[in-house]
Length: 398
Image 1 (tube, rainbow, N blue to C red):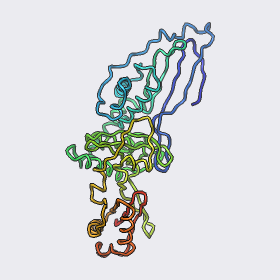
Image 2: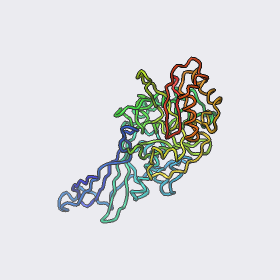
Image 3: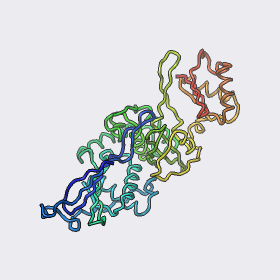
Image 4: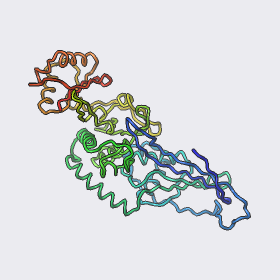
């Protein structure tokens, strides 16, 4: 951080300005954690303008509004200490009320940062704020109070108008799903919704919040993660934004809870594509990142240590198991039926295998030996993607 020194009488102020989220993806990813600059003022000649400068022990700071305890059941909130939850509530209340600044009940900077990170993780819909400024008030060497000021990007009226526009789009997008569907159906719906309706675009305006997703349909990883949290919350599914590193660069994704068990979702990587023999590029939804275990998530992601995360081992709501394309035994007729159905519908189908031996056996049988023709009437060539890491073969019939 750059240290800038200024001059003021008797009152020591340290101000940190932080921007919380920046663009990121599997290709071009930037830092998404709070960053900023720090400035420190030092006393000047006390005989100059002494009467114009307030003393630290007489400075009046507005007390925080009565905090709203509305976040019980939110993942990040529930994993904070009692003191951190109080500060979380104070910050969230200030942001929701569009307050200019408040005095926090803590003077612990690390606690303040943890609480703010938790707020951002639990609430992907805070599109009108980007980071915060804090001011420390000291008396001599003693830190006497800590002031929190959210950095707003729009006025209250602009926020209200934007929210109306977002609500209209979200209502239309969620028209095909209800609160009564299963958690798996909700997660799959949201994952497909974002893959089909949102394009990854670097440096797009408002890429760090849900405006870019719902009003522009162009975003980066932070926008995807915020939208996942926001949409699943509308459907009653717990979700939190996770930050960390993917492929060596900063990234954001989600932890979601389906039927009481945790999984990871990375909607940014849900849209995949391939080129056929003629060079024509075709996109398809990659379901590998829809409901990952911790082990699967760690194959490409490393989360930060700022958020306590569970060990995700459940596979019940894994896409391939749910959709019947998880292959544990050698049953060519069953696999052939899956391929036949996909061929007739003209879509991509991915078979995931329990081990490498089964995958190689299927590749040899259906592709090298050509027995796929027994199940896909009229097929003359096969476009396929072989993925050794995930032990998969994707047959591209679209």
